[in-house]
Each structure stands twice: as structure tokens, then as C-alpha cells.
Length: 237
Image (cartoon, rainbow, N blue to C red; front, side, top):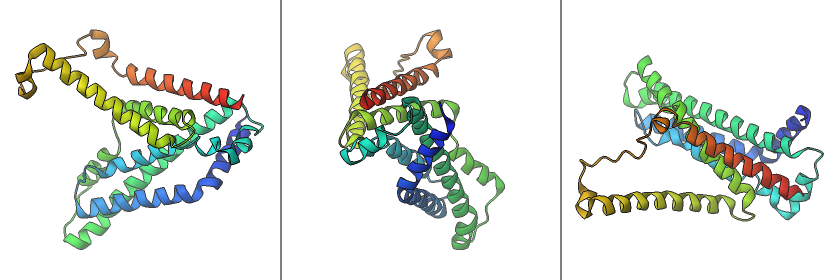
């Protein structure tokens, strides 16, 4: 694996998509600034960079699969591993950059703009709370890595409207899981159990799942990353 090739791929991607990336960065910073200006702790604002990252992952290989660009991309003197590594580096870099912009915008709105509008002071502790809202836990990052891996695979698996199809399948899967467990509760406990808040079903009542639950998103992420690599290799052939 040649690092120079990966750097050249990264540079080419940035040159071709710099306007889009710049717009996403400005929107992320603007929404975070506005959100933390009008509200002390807006719950939905920290999720904006994550949805933009899903958009980047879900459309990453889409432009490369178009007829006008496919020959240019797949005939580059780089290996499949280098192209795949390049994709991971782009997504990781974009995720870090968008998160930094979100934190910067949140601190700007909370400490600089909000006091001018509402004439209230902000403490250092409130700034720490903002950082906690924008920096997730380790398990959250693992789950997000799994979801991103699925969107990245969808970007190369579907030739048209990859993001929309991947998003639709994800929503359908979540609804399917929800209906499954609701139906399971109905079958086991009866109709009245659906409104009984005292019922608690522990579906992970195994010592292994309780102690190593974080391995599930890791395995799923590796599975989708492997499928992405194989699909990329198959497409090149």
C-alpha cells in the first residue's frame, strides 16, 4: 500500500468536492451557533454533523459509479486497498472536522452571541456541558461506525439514488425490529401488556452479551466494511 497514492486520492477528492464540503461545514457551524444562541442546550443540534457524515458516506462511491467518472476512478494506478483506505480516511477526517465546527459554533453561540441578546453570563461549567453534548460515549461511536459502514456499502452497492435507498432500507429495518418486538410482547403477554409500563423484557439476559455488548456493532461494522471492499474490488474487475 502506497501512502503517496492515498494522499493523491485524498487531495483529488478534496479538490472535486471542496465546494460541497465547504457548504456542509458552514451549515454545521451556522446551525450550531444559532441553536446554542436561542437555547442553552438544544438537544437536536449536536446530531447535525452526524447526519451530514451519513450523507458523505452514503454518496461517497456514487459519483465514481457514474459512466462519465467511472473510468477515471477505476483506472487510477492504485490498488483496491488504497481506494478503500482513502474512503475511510475521508469519512474519518470529515467526521472530525464537522464535529470541531459544531463544537466551535456551539461555544460561539453560547458564550459570544447569546450573552449579547439575553444579557446573561455563561459559566465554564456550561461550556463543559456543551462539550459533553457534542462528544459521545465510546459505545455511541461504535454504533455510529456500524451505521456509517452500512451507508458506505450502500453507496457502492446501489448504482442510482444510493443515499435514498440506503436510508429507506435503514428505516424499514428499524420499523421491522420495532414491530417484531411489539408483536412478541403481544403474543407473550396479551393485548393489555402494550400499555403496561411495568413490563420489562431483558432480551440480553446473557452474561456474554452483558459484558461484551460492544462487540456487536464492531462485528457488524467490520462485516459491512468487508462487503464494501469486496464490492469495490468486484466493480473494478
